[in-house]
Image (cartoon, rainbow, N blue to C red; front, side):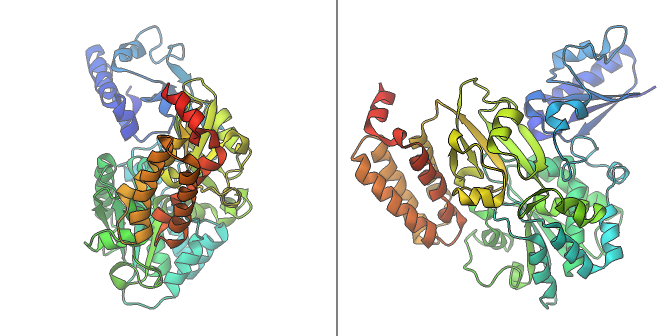
Length: 513
């Protein structure tokens, strides 16, 4: 009898030794003369348990973690190999509280299936969404996505159905679907996890989008820092083409393009410029990409998570998805916990959890054991929230009401040792480094802001220089062409507003001592 053992090939798991664990399992099985089939999956997203090895038993999978190569022989020993009595056994994955509390829709297969097996994908419900879309017709498919309430998961939260309908209603000889997988926000990894753990989901979602709006060509723009994701996606595209799921028979092609690491290319018009072989500069709008996008043609440009959620919406119906969430924030969001947090990982849940629940209950508090002091939600351009705002629901409108951003769903936790003046400086320096240079407020304002923040940290006329920072942030917010400059004031001003003591001379003097 062959025992199936699942070891993640996700970049996060590989970074902590998953490849060595997989090799050790094969070596030990060979030494003992046992038949094993090691399946390399994506990650379930419980990063503090990685590498998390799962063994298929008559009662379902049993997980062990975090495993090292030295722990592998212990899995095979004893009266009952792969026993639940093993010190690293964490039981059935679905029973682990971190997973049990989730509502997995977009990430339902991640960590479970072999990412480069179409048979595995289909066996777990793959391509049901595309089949239903074809039975409904193009117009009804757009309507189904609209009714679901799905909004852009890249940060702006724009209704996906409205964007699709605009492209569908625009007459042109050619249209495009562009997947924005340039996941550059700090503390985010949801896009990468899908590409490495469930790539056919993205292919199916893009194919549905192409069918719905009349596009025959799709592009996936992946950041160069994701070599594993690039490799898996390229393999999945080849397999889909071989099965007739892409290409002439499917009337839809997908091409993968790799970006060069510019953060600003996460902005949709800069991304389009890069795809066209130009420097990643922001385009002025209008015209909107839905009217005049890639190569001047109508283009649906969606974040990867938006497109990867579409198959489930079509397969199970718009109402099933829309019934989750709160207010205008419908469905689920992959919350990505990172920073100084005990249980870092991906937690997919319906909108409505509070920040306090996310950080304290789900994340388990800080990894350092010190009190949490601040949380940054929405990447390097997101606002810093103090504990006093931990009652804020994870919801687009609730965050906007408190001058915050959900962004791509990254939640970065800081304990009470953080220096918020230096965090504010980092935001300005980040903008200065990553600016495309096209508009003056972003190009010059971020540099002047960094210099001014250095003066504040040095104790040089803090009140006057804080007033100058506030003025610069107003210019950045309302004068920048895109969100890079326009959102930089969020982390800067929230740090000043909520943590004023970190910007005063006594605090700085004490820190220096």
